[in-house]
Image 1 (cartoon, rainbow, N blue to C red):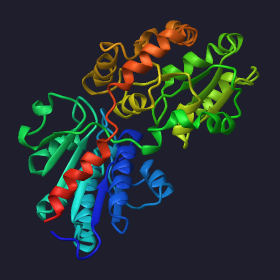
Image 2 (cartoon, rainbow, N blue to C red):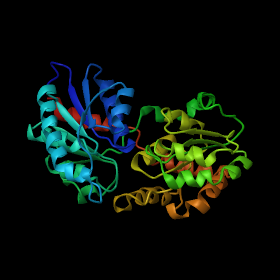
Image 3 (cartoon, one colour):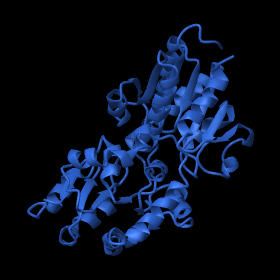
Image 4 (tube, rainbow, N blue to C red):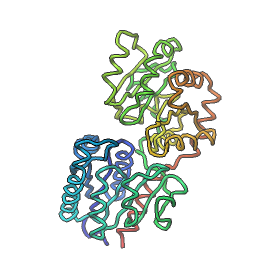
Length: 370
């Protein structure tokens, strides 16, 4: 298909930052090559993509769709109705927008739009972030044109002939964080001579990490450490209640950090969950990290993500159940060991794939440029 008119691309994925930010990275990379491209996002009504995508400058349409819960709920009873309604709306979006290709990064909304696209024989690209494939991506894989993955051995989930090992796309502003140190310290009002700990729990937050930090505020303050702390929107109020009345001078507490490039630039050590996006960003930001895998994910895939780094001498890991007694202590020990930090930084940098978004766009172009 030639570009006699500007390319029209639909990108769908959401529910968490792990689906949204790769989708945005792909959109940015495609628009860099094709500035006049018309890019439309499709998300799930009420989910975080309905805010984050417009903030990034793209249009988004919401579907009435949600995931299945593990217990009997009204939402579960409505799921078949939501799925049919979302598929019909997705079909109308395909019919009116007439995309050259559709990209799905996983999450509730990508299923209906990818199914509607394949039914119309429109080229489709799946982007799977994790070592354990998501349910939506597995369901649509057989009819997808290309499947871009970030981990080896994904043939157990997807047709081998469709797989492309591209890595996870991340925002390009993560690639040059070392040059932003001065700007970052100014942004967060931090002191240059003090060490800085960045605490992340994923886009939705992590209770275990938040509780571990809350319980050790005095220890962190006594160590002379500055802390940038993203609690997640779900936990911001409970964290404020837990830390009320304590000395918060060394702490910068946010429900969500929009300028993650500056957060990484300001940090000397990072505490983080081990989601696929977090791992990819840490590799490109080259930051020493203490990873706390979430135990509440399919096939314990965050532990597998973390061990992939630990086994390469590229990160440290603390089990979720040990975080209360070990997490802050390990982070402080690492902050105080500059040689260990340098070693972890060098090793994690070797695992990054800075061209992931561009390689996915390469695959898109192969499908739509004739």
